[in-house]
Each structure stands twice: as C-alpha cells, then as structure tokens.
Length: 170
Length: 378
Image 1 (cartoon, chains in turn brown, blue):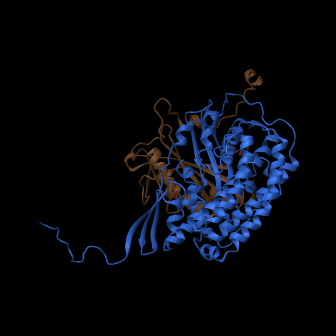
Image 2 (image 1 turned 45 degrees about the horizontal axis):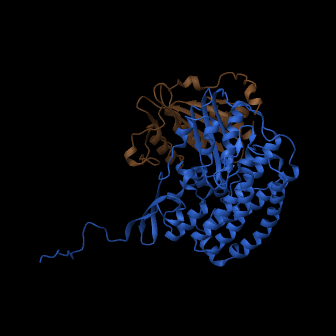
Image 3 (image 1 turned 135 degrees about the vertical axis):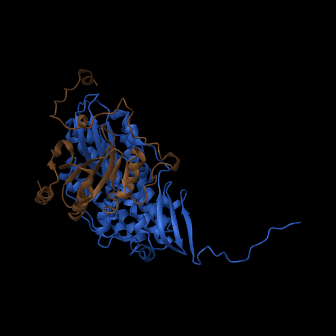
C-alpha cells in the first residue's frame, strides 16, 4: 500500500470510520467503507481535506433500503475508495454537494434514477430526465428482480468454470 | 376601428438593468450536440450559466441490466462517439477483471495501438471544432484530412469508422496485419510533419492566443472540488492520467510523458491536447516495435459466469477518466452497471467557470473542455 494511502487509512481509523482494504486485482479499488448516513458529511469533509476527488455518486436498488455508492480517488497515486451509504426509510441521504461541488449533478442524477432525496441539496430538480418524468425512477428494480444487499457482496471467490467445450470449437 | 392602446409608461416592476435570459442551444453550433445552456445575462456578461442536460438520454445503464456482455458491447461505442475504443476497453477489461480472464499479450498491444489511434482521431476532431468555435474555419479542413487517414486505417481492422465495437472479452475481434502496421507507421511519420502546420496555422496565431489566454481558468482547487479529469485537469497542472496512475493493459511498458499546463486556462488545455497527440504517436510507435506474435483472442466461455460482488475499472478515455462500476449478482447479466463519464464532471464546472465572463469567452471555455454530449447524457 502506498504510504500516503496508509496515512489516510490510519487517519480514517482514528476518526472511527470502518475502513477496510480490498483486493485491487479483482475489485479495482483499494478501500471500502460501509457508512451510517449521519457520518457521510464528516467523511466527505475529511476526504476533501486529504485531496481525494469525487469519481461518481450512484444508486443501487437493493432490499431493505436503497444504497448510495460514492467512489473517491486520488490524483497523485493509485488509491480508490468506495463508500456505501444506506438511505433511511424515506429514501433520505444527506447531501455532500456543498463539500464536493461536483456531487451536485451526480446527486441530481441519482434523484432522477432512484428517487433518493438528498437532504440539503440546493437544487434537486431533474437533470437527465425531463421535468414530467420526475417520478419515473427508471433504475428501480421490479419486485422479482430485487436482491438483498448482502447477496451482492463478495464472498470467497469460486473458481471460474473451464472453457466450455462448445466454445473450444469456435 | 379600435386600436390596441400602447402603454408608454415605464414598467415599475422590472429592475432597470440589463438582465435577461438567453438560451444557448439545444441547437447551437458551438455546443457540438444537443446541449442547452440557460444563460442569465447582464448585457454581454454572463451572470449564471446553467447547462440543461438529457436531450440525448438513452438510459444505457438500464440497458446494461438486461443484456449480457456481448449484447451490450455496441452500446459502449455509442456514448463517446468521438473516441469509442477506450469505452470498449474499459467495459471488456471490467469483465476480465471480475471473471479473472487472461488476455493474450498481442491482444493488449492491439488494444493500446487502436485506442491511441482513436485518441488521435478524437483530438483531431476537437482541434478542428474548437477553432471553428473561435471563428477560424481553415483548421478543421486540415485536421479532417489527417483524421480521415486514421479512420481509414481503423476501418480496415475494426469494420467501422465511428462507433467501434472491436474489443472482446479475452482480446479483440480481428487480428492486425502487416498492412495495418505499415500504414500506421506511415501515418506516424506524416502526422509528425503536420504538427508544424498546426503550429504555424494556430499555435502562434496572435488572434488565437488573445482569445484563449486567461479565458476559463480552472484552478487546482476547483478541479478537485468538481472531480475534473483528463486534459482539462492536466491543463490546470494536475499530473493525473489513469494510464500512469493505475497502469492497465500494457501501458506500463511504454515510455511516454504526461503534458501539463500551468494556468488552467483555455490555452493550456489546447497545448496539453496538442502535446498529447505526440505522446500517443510515441506509444503507438513503441507498441508497433514491440508487437509480440501470438493469439489475438483468448478462449473465453461464450456465457460468462460472473462471481457475486462489485468491481470497478477505470481507463483514460480521450476526455478523461472513464470508470465502469459493476455490481454482479452472479449469472451473466450485471445487477447494476454505473458508468462514470469524464465530460459529465468536466462540464459541471461550467456554472462556476462561466460566472462574470463574456458570452464569446464562454464559447472558448466550452470548446476547450472538449465536450461530447451523448456521453454526458448517456
């Protein structure tokens, strides 16, 4: 791990954020945090001070509550951090658009696609979707397709099946 | 006959200044796509520019949740139409990472060569279009001569000229031949001479410098707050390039530099992209020299069985960092695919960037951001 990343990890642990290291080769990011919504703004402030930029904000429709996924990265070393925050019963998550100004649009997009209400956002109107589609929420899953949050987490990796015999002939 | 009474009394409820709203787009030539910018103006000066997005929205992320990797491949070429191969690259590489599929070395070289050619094509388009925005008509004619040459080379191999669907999980769909190598080498020699033409025509042009210098300044702090990447961030002196920071494919084997600007103005972004073209040529040259023999496509199962979990893959697209983030619930179709496109974050600086500048300078600033609207709308 890069020394600056180690410093970041110890800083986050000091503030009692549950940061965990990940296998970069398979997951493409180095650190992950499962976070309570009320500590999100504190974390964002901390990451901005450490010069991590916001890669994206995205939603994920899972049971029991919609999750909002944030990815942060560093400009000067390979360091990616994924933060997952579960929305509360009313689909509310605090905004970080006043800390990371780039989050403004990402949050509006997540509001468009998932109906997540970012509390404190200055202008939470449709960005990508048309105004009349404000309640469309196209990325919400049908009940049959909806999975539990825990069912989408990494478990011990199974071996990939060997090349199918059919494919050999191509 | 009754005539309408003209009210010549001055209206008292309108403040006596020059504020008004102006719509730039959605069909404005300098937005290069259906982007609308709602401008609150005070005379010639902009008070508040607000981009209005979504005119070309196709919901690629939803489509990804219903298709296996091959069925979604054509979609990846239809976001950033000017540089589709890096989009191919990130997508197949994500599956390879998730499923642990080894890619033959020759395939990785072919990917790098064609991606860099595609970056050149994209920069040709940007260079011509940017100067067209500034009122210079001639450069686009020159850059398109050069662009056509690369497109012909790529067309022979990939089968398309714009919306490529060339990469496959495990490699590429067609091997390159000696003719491709020869033509590419010829092109490298040709393009190096053309930089002199660009420089004589544009870089030293006093009118161009006066219009670009000091216009649309993005500071390092501003770039950090908005998550700006790519040549826009590098123009502000941020030494960030995914090809160097998190070397994917075989980029770590090549010797190339990351051109940087200092002031973060439109001129710096112009210089960064122009210098990047030379660096792309260097990468292609080295890749052709080292090109290994071997298979161009690994034997991957037709129906991929993905493990449960999430994975992320970032590549350096022509406009900056492109990240695919996939959450898989097993099977061969993703549970969710998030696509982070560079222009989205790069354009989001506009409300702050455009405050208090002249309308004509906004055209310069937007041109220097190198926007591709279908990638923003997705």
